[in-house]
Image (cartoon, rainbow, N blue to C red; front, side):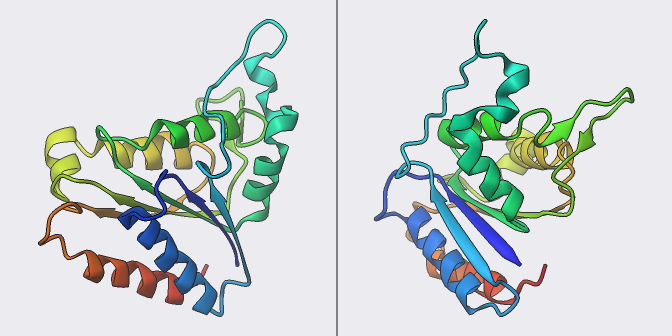
Length: 195
């Protein structure tokens, strides 16, 4: 299994970075994972702005040469892991900008004459590791599970990725947030997961 880890947080001395390290450590110890690539969107200085106009059409985004490296990473990966915080009930703008530009028509999906498009990223699995300041159940109770619906139904299922797992960790700024226990949980999952 080939694993692409997409990290979206600007601070390398943060809990999100600690989660990234546990994902990497678990992947490296997992005999089912033969290779990993890490994409740090902030370190990469990824430009999240979606720009199109009369000379750069939205329908041609799938062949934007600036995104070729990232398309190759997504095509290469069997498993894609996203590590990010939940801000205002959703992933950061940096990650959403990556999604807007990479999950484009004729690369991630193809329009058909039917009701739904054909997902072109079939067979890949996805894991989202996300943190938030509020309680773990906040997105479910107050936001009608908007984060998971956005990521799973509106994005991953749309492009053909059906195997999706979430780790949503709340109370991460609390002294009683059980941070080490949650870090261990992530490490254990990635050290044992088989594609």
